[in-house]
Image 1: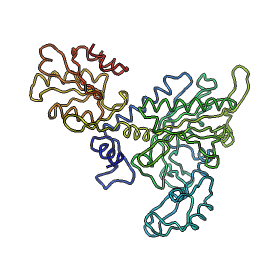
Image 2 (image 1 turned 90 degrees about the vertical axis):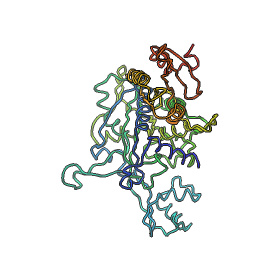
Image 3 (image 1 turned 30 degrees about the horizontal axis):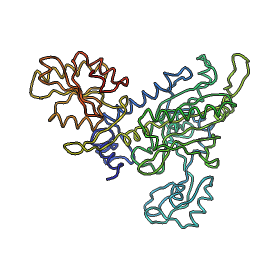
Image 4 (image 1 turned 60 degrees about the horizontal axis):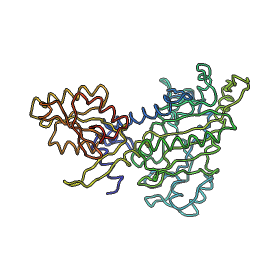
Length: 461
């Protein structure tokens, strides 16, 4: 069984990710996050916000609506340019990305138009993955279309946003008017986006609804290269903070012919997934394209006035873009480990401490000893004020340790008969499996030191 299959099985078994609408047969490439997956997502999202927004003096956050005025998407170019080449199997009617089929056949599709890709398809006499003839290719817009109000007609047609970026550009004037900001500065947002992907797949890697963590960083045109380099470095630091092995991460410079319509330079940060080297994050230099487009289409002044010189400029933009689900997927892949131990093999999820969905597990040594149970439950309740805690009295202690190793709980606390005598408890470390004994009254202080980064071995000294 390869790593991807193991992670898929583990993720469902332990409540990280479930198939969406499963009792009704599911929905293609729809995924629900279970209790542990939800905690994991919340931890990643909150830490990203802390690192990139709260800790910075040059960053402001917003939370914009999912549905925007359709004129936004006309101005941004999404109505015209947010398209993928679609081809359909004549027999099964399954649909595929034409560019993906050509790439799998060894064709470099960089810069190719639909007409050129269609000609190549016919020249190579390519068939569908099922071996059937293909219909004539066409372009497919990936935005989800819906309607406001009770009557569905073109006058009230709207779209679920395909990206979070445009709300930050549309709110640029509001930010300037209500905050004392000077260039360079950024606007950040975390939220859902929706793309009607032709061929989603690879678990939660490519889905039709997903969460983005994005920054639009505004600067002067002559400074963009320095800011671009800076943000690329910051993105790599974040990956290290997430516990991602840098050997699995690569920077891919997007060729000019493949750049998005708004970009002058883009670097994809790729990761070595079990299904191939694929994009994890993106860093784009969007120039002043978006602000100028919205100025032209809205008639509003979206320029920035320097408070010292009164110079009016249209800022240029660096966009670091992070996918939350892809971050979670990589965290699952990196943390999943199998280790040989005395009694066989243990599965252990070595998440960074801050990321672990459960921070502390509390066990009574015996589940049928009322005094041990009462003391363990009291400790668990006290710690819940500051940590995600699980009380666990199911099975032998060894089994409980293995269970919490598998979900990545960094610390397990055991209440035993000595606890009733001297009020000490045993704390066991997930990674080293070492144990220390401390006073129960010192638990809050000890856990605080551990989650601030202190080595486990030093906690008992």
